[in-house]
Length: 187
Image (cartoon, rainbow, N blue to C red; front, side):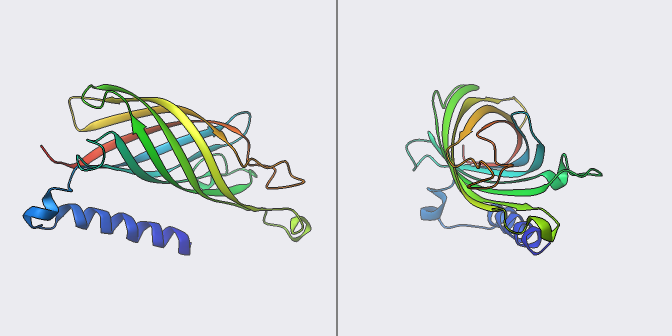
């Protein structure tokens, strides 16, 4: 629960930052901030849902590089009212978007972060339940005329677990969909 509170405070801080007045030199760095929801599916495993943020600026390779944060969990997916393992993914990502002036943009991303699985029973205490994450994904982004953006991608966890080493529920292949609302955009 403490992790969820930290995430909520971070999200509120981002929204407050987007609303506050800035000087001219700070406005040069303003680009585009999007907040949204993300759904992710490990191949042949769990559905995970959560929240995501994406930021880009004309000062960072002319809006081609995007920086982001995502939190996805089975607690908002497969583990709702089931005995699925409760697991959390905290991800920072660095993406490169091609054709950044078009509505349809192919992209590729490097993701890093932290994985935690809550096995909920002492009999599993010897099993690995945490891992540092490193993954790559590629997909497409589509920006609608409304301030809505859709990301679809497929990815590969380079640090997937086998159960013997690393968490057994951290599968290598995953698919994700994110829907963003643009909070601010520098014109």
